[in-house]
Image (cartoon, rainbow over the protein chains, first blue to last red):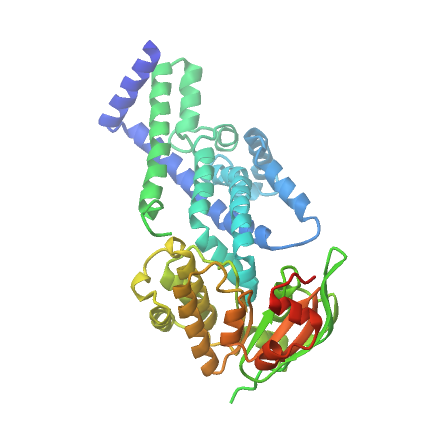
Length: 234
Length: 238
């Protein structure tokens, strides 16, 4: 109990003094996570819609694989990306290992299946609702996807926020590909892991509270900005 | 002058699902102007016939052809469903949707949407979420959305089922206007009064086939078969 109170105190102090290290790693956490979220959403949302409307051979298998990929262990993703980006790997020449870009790549791989799967589930129901109308209006496949993504945007926002939640709290993969280098690739989660291993639990807890606050703030801000609960409007 | 997509010709057309024949074989030609009302007992194939004509159901056998290429024909027809499909948008955006698909500018689409909303009595609800409309209002919205592209042929599957008299009167008025403006109407109904009010000719479906097809006066005054007579008397016909 004492350590939790110490943690809260540490978090409070870090925040009110606008600790420069805290600001730096918080901004880096946001930069990496939001970049990964934007890239993943651009891939996963249209893909989820496409999967909802398209009938093809082995579709069920594709959906099963997508759902299974939601549970892919981040550490394995980290290892996979590490091997690809390491000097001897196929993309070693790009020099991306131990950079925020490598962390973004790992997070994109982790959260894209999650966002795509949730998007697919939501849009499948919307497609069942709209199917006859959109066929009747002689829409193209592109128009159908566009319509589903727009009209299902509230559910898709939830899918993206789930991806954000997973990415902001991710530690295993980004530790491997980022290396937790001070002033370069250190983010909130890897800093918490480091402080814990050093035995500085109050600072680790303080960082943890900041991380929780950040996750909640971003969720609330996105809901507020998109006014998803506004009365009488979609 | 744009070439008409009519006549629509059905030759020995069959619609089957999971090996079970739902409709057919049907041979019929939809041509000219006016309103064709499709009646028949539940399960006789009225909805499937309309959906098949519109291209929502695949034909298993036979030949269905419009006077124009399929793509051209499908862009000049609309369908109103028994349970209106309402998009998760405002009334205005629901109405503007078919026009934006057709490449109209947002301004043009919104102006037309506002005109049609006023025509069906939804002029004051433009910015409201369409999901908050009542059942009758949703059906009016669906009808206006179907007519906004001024289709040459409009299919309606029991559009007034579950509606009160007031909403039914508005919808029938809009349909009469559309007919006067040259839209060919094909509509299924259970309401014999409505059939008498709107029909120029009647198709009587029984057991998935067109049992009788006749001008409205002939159909109601001198039915050609005992089954039609029984149906009009209100007896159960299978």
